[in-house]
Image (cartoon, rainbow, N blue to C red; front, side):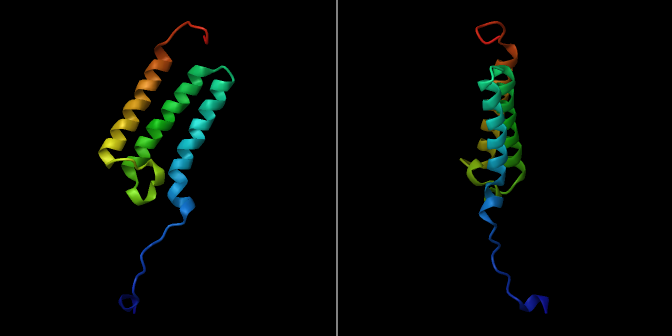
Length: 101
C-alpha cells in the first residue's frame, strides 16, 4: 500500500526555514546589547560568534532550510561567514586601550 500513495513535495513551515537566520539574528542582537552597554569587546565577540554559527549552519543544512543565510554557493557562503567572523574576533581581542577600554 505504501507505494501506491503518491508523495507530495515537502513544504516546510516558513518559521522552520527562517529558524537558522533567527538564531544568528538573536546572537547579533545580544552582541548589539553588549555594545550598547559599553562592553564592546564582548559585543564584537558575540557578533563574530554569530558569523561562525552562520557558517556552520550553512555548511550542514540544505539550502532549502537555511532561508536568508543563502547568498551565493555553499562554499562561498561558508568561507565568507567564517573568515569575517574570525577577523572580527581577532580585532576585538587584539585592540588594547582606546576610548572604549
